[in-house]
Length: 165
Image (cartoon, rainbow, N blue to C red):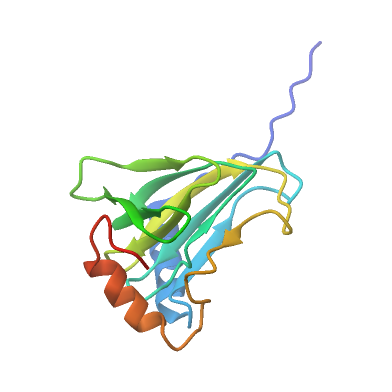
């Protein structure tokens, strides 16, 4: 006789997205995440991220990993940069756009702008997580919490390809 062990199935409902969006709205950072992988040592890291338009994802890049994000609620704009902070591309992804996901290759400077309250994506990236190499933040962009962040967000929303940070 053969024995089959079933692992715990995870089902993610739309209610979860609403709860995560509410947490993001109540958060000082205006975003929240839910980790769905078991540990930092997992070979595939997976989490939902919900964000409001007032959140700031400091431009960054990942030297050792690519990342895939699937927008499951709302809409984001992905903005990419060259090494000097010049905008190289802009892509709207999610509701009411032709695109639903993006994958950023390793070493690509990028940021996200939430275009709708409670916009949420599922991010998948290679593991295991190493805090020392997870992300490099752009020196030409202010740190999260800096007094200039509201002006930076306004600039990012209006800037065109070719504009420099």
